[in-house]
Amino acid sequence: MILTNTKILDFFDSLGESHQEFIQLVSIKKNKNIIEQGKYSKFIYVLKEGIMKCTISEENSKSYTLEFLGIGEIMGEIETLLKCKNLATIKSLTDCELYKIEIDFFRKELLNDPNFNHLLMVELARRLQKTATRASSQQLNTLQTSLKNLLYLLEDQKVKFKKSDLAEYLGITVRSLNRELKNYNQTLERLNS
Image (cartoon, helix red, strand yellow):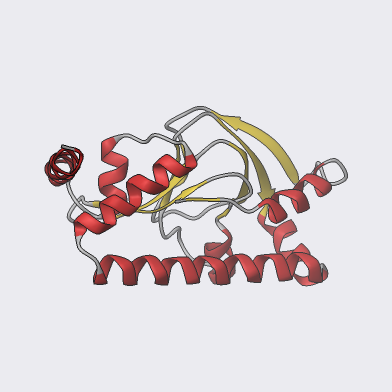
């Protein structure tokens, strides 16, 4: 549920000291947007500490959370590669530390460092694989099954999220989530009695 990428983090940890003019370590507080949907970014970010969420908002004011991002996750790279406006909003769910990387430096590293180029290609392929797997799971399984799987992931990763974040992740309203949680708890009670 929370994506991480220690290899990309290790790469930028190793560059940080020697390239301070292009890479800065910045701290941001909880509930701050670092990337806003529909705007151009001036930087690429790599999450060093904390948790963020990546959300797409539709014209009807509904939002869908694509992913929760953990350490090592890179943000803004797709828009930089495509030279387009941001596809999503990325917001901090906790206090965070991030590497803030200048776009020209990022592009130069992609062209000149085969190791970094490979790390980024693997990251993009991994995200595509995860998105396809999640989309097929949500299409082929009931909401009850998706909720059960999500609750297992939360327990396994020992994290807690607000109901609104979980509802956005499942693509439902908080009201629907509450109803499904009630049904889920009633089923558990029947099984345990």
